[in-house]
Length: 82
Image 1 (tube, rainbow, N blue to C red):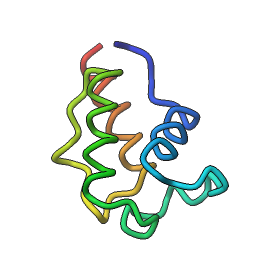
Image 2 (image 1 turned 180 degrees about the horizontal axis):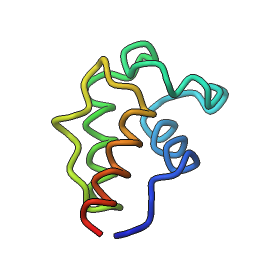
Image 3 (image 1 turned 45 degrees about the vertical axis):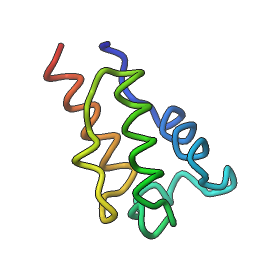
Image 4 (image 1 turned 45 degrees about the horizontal axis):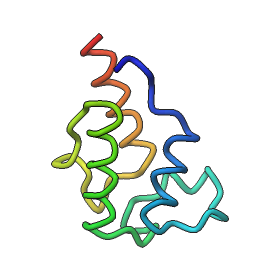
């Protein structure tokens, strides 16, 4: 499970839970709330991350967390586990 969560992976996760594919990557620094991604969307993202990367981040994905922060957290945990 040493593969890192990439910007492409992040976009795939976000569009899978309802974010428009037209949203620019720069918007990933906005919070989940600002991107109109609710708690169900965050739970789905966390589940997909757990399944693919083996990292549990469900409790860390709050409305005020940004997708970029989530990506950083996943990658930190992947590095720690390596």
